[in-house]
Amino acid sequence: MHTAKGRDISIYRYEQGAVDDWSENMEQALRLALRRGEFELFYQPKVCLRQRNILGMEALIRWRHPTQGLLSPQHFITAAESSGVIVPIGYWIIEQVCKDMQTLVDHGLFDVSIATNLSFRQLQDEPFCKALPRLLQEANVNLNCLEFELTETTMLTEPESALDTLNQVTALGVTISLDDFGTGYSSLAHIRQYPISTIKIDRSFTQRVSLDHEADSIVRSIINLAHDLNMQVVAEGVEDDTQLNFLLGNGCDQVQGYLFSEPRPMWEVLQLIDKILLP
Ligand code: C2E
Ligand code: CA
Ligand code: CA
Ligand code: CA
Image (cartoon, rainbow, N blue to C red):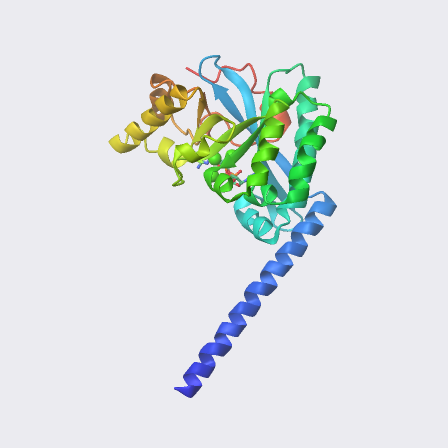
């Protein structure tokens, strides 16, 4: 009994040590990657169903790791958030997004907007919240073409003061989207205090339409609800024509997904603009 217990404890210590080691190394690795310029932004087009063209794109971070190759956020975003390194990475993202907005203008694309994801961790960081409106104003870009995507969880965990920041950037022309809608548990009443102009339907719903009656009614209800509240709707994760046709038939505004393009470097997405992407 005594030895068994002793062994348990030593195993526990060993595992704790390993976890701490790993997260410490990961934090160092992320900071180093940032200094070495190993992060890149890929872009995924959002296709407007009415105008049948790309009117916006979402910036999605990638890590070009020197030995592991191109890493998607699932491999590092949680570590970046829990360690707080997402804050310095987030400053870099905003800077890069502003440069890429200038690239769009240089290509004569004055109305194509860029959306970027904001983490709860960034909105909990007071210096970030204070700096954001000023950074955006100094960036010399058309802020009407910039969008922030926030999840319900982010909106619920952020401090009150973050709402101030979101109101300030909205006053500058930035729009706010509610990301992964349908996966949270919050009431829309609570979320209504945020200046949201777009709802993004989570891909777990998009991908069940036409297979599952419940998903059909959920997606239809989200679209109607959003429109009643004067919001736009984007469906994420559209992979096939059946899903597309359902969304077309039910008045969804924009679609995003592998059917049109995976997230790719900006120059590749530019080549898709004005191409025929819809039936
Ligand atoms: P998200 O914001 O919900 O982004 C959409 C994710 O769905 C992206 O994954 C995208 O590649 C993927 N996706 C798009 N279309 C399809 C499709 O048709 N089928 C399937 N199966 N997947 C599709 P990605 O790029 O791996 O990003 C994952 C998550 O990491 C994002 O989810 C977002 O929460 C986070 N993330 C990505 N970039 C950033 C960033 O710059 N900052 C922050 N804070 N988070 C980021
Ligand atoms: Ca997003
Ligand atoms: Ca999403
Ligand atoms: Ca997601």
